[in-house]
Amino acid sequence: MTKKEFQIALGKRIRQLREDKNMSQTELGNLCDIERSNMSRIEAGNTNPSSYLLYLFAQKLEIEASEFLNFKSLDK
Amino acid sequence: MTKKEFQIALGKRIRQLREDKNMSQTELGNLCDIERSNMSRIEAGNTNPSSYLLYLFAQKLEIEASEFLNFKSLDK
DNA sequence: AATATTGCTATCAAATATGATAACATTGTA
DNA sequence: TACAATGTTATCATATTTGATAGCAATATT
Image (tube, each protein chain N blue to C red):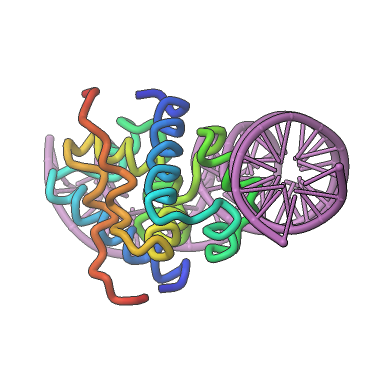
């Protein structure tokens, strides 16, 4: 999985978990002190967010941070 | 958990999982195409590594990436 | 219809991570 | 003892993420 592919998969996962909580990008962004434009970039897979940001997302969505990285082990 | 506290906890976890595989910083760094000085910085909690790097670590250590983020839920 | 909300994209500056390298201490090994 | 490997810290340059902002389209909501 390339970096870009990873980012896209991660972005989709973040969006999915955010929508499960019926939260907007703006809301989650505010809770985590990041811009909504950045939320959009991240969910679109256009950037490679920091580990700490994943932790913040998880905290604010009240889920385990590890859920973001539960990718099916497709590749070696 | 502050950003710094997170980085320290994450760094310790990375070190622990790396040593479990009897791998040196140099070896894991080479496999992931990152400098050994960067490995040291990360494990010391002096930097906030990218999500993709966690993924690479997991792949090369043959573990689930989610293991890096399995922190005990100490904080709200 | 008008307004607000949401999400996307682009731009530029600021902050941060990483590469590359060097020097040092420590430990293992020849 | 020498030598290599390992890990740490520091520096500076480069790359990347993020902040801040704006404009746009689409969709609610009034």
